[in-house]
Image (tube, rainbow, N blue to C red; front, side, top):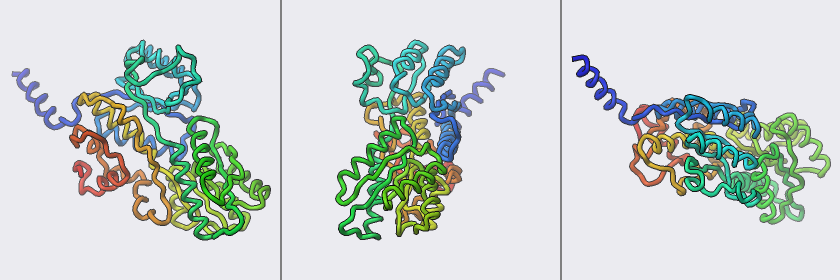
Amino acid sequence: MLKHILLLLVIISSSIFSSKILAIDVTYISQTQTITPYWYNTYAVAEAAAKDLGIDLTIIEGQGHRIFQTEVIEKLASALKKPDLLIFHAYKQNAYEYFTTLEQAKIPFVTYSDFTDTDHLSSHKQLGQPLGKYKYWLSEHYVENSQGAALLVKNLIKQAITVKSPSNSKLKVLALSGDLILESLKRSSGVAVQVKETDNVILVQDIIANWSAEDAKIKFKRLYARHNGIDVVWASSDVMAIGALDGAIELDLQPNKDIFIGGFDWNTEAIKKIKENQLSASAGGQFYNIAWLLVQVYDHLNNQIPFTTKDQRINDKYTIIDQSNIALFEPLTNIDILSKINFYCFTKAFTRQQSYDFSMSKLLKQSKTTAKKNCQ
């Protein structure tokens, strides 16, 4: 009799939770040592997605250091209870060691890094492609930082040209980079290429401001004097953009008239500054990307829908928010919207589609459902 009751409970449970067949343990090693607004949002979105998908998510801060990350991966590999899947930002210098360790431990993993160019690695350290040399390397995902950088500076230049209407003189662009890691370098490269391809615009300097508002403010004021004025400030984060804005105001410059400033991340304060006509633009949307990866992890482990080369890039096109579209996209910048979004609705298990739709428009549509359990 007891067996029959237990069996009935199992059947009822499986019918109620059919969308979450297995409990999945996923570990995510982030790339930070400081919880900035961007990382706060990234964690909040990832945790919300994990809850919707029935995933037990463990987040470990990687301290932005490849040696520390190596130690973390070695501990995970030697643990008695290993994660069902690991997501991490891999460094090229240590990728061979990471991959070998995880392969030997038989831990499936997904890298959130761009390894399209590894020619500088020695032959025995070449990584190949996912599901190739390393069978447990399921997929590689990354965003096009160079594309996002180009899109942002192009937007800022367009705004500046519209208002300032320069004739003989060239518009002066200042780039404030975060550091020398690959993602930051790709953003800097994207700015340089876009400016070079634009008539009557010059990149006066690209300087590292260490993701700091105060550093950005100080360096902006010094460089504004050195270059006898600056028209556009492109920053690799909204935090630095706000720092440059503070510096501009201290120099009695009028935002969106004398100078045009924008950054990355859809920082709450930056969005407020755009509404107040202080900042000019912010590139963002990428703090949803770990959540999108978890959607694919769910499909891969629960529904045997494998990762494919077609799904390597997660929402790689940044979305720019400026005065023209802030009313539309502002809800997506506030994590309060998570109470209205069910990330299961984006799985192939639900949509039965061949490809994923992780667009901002789809996210907006899903957020407008009458109840979180409903899918649009």
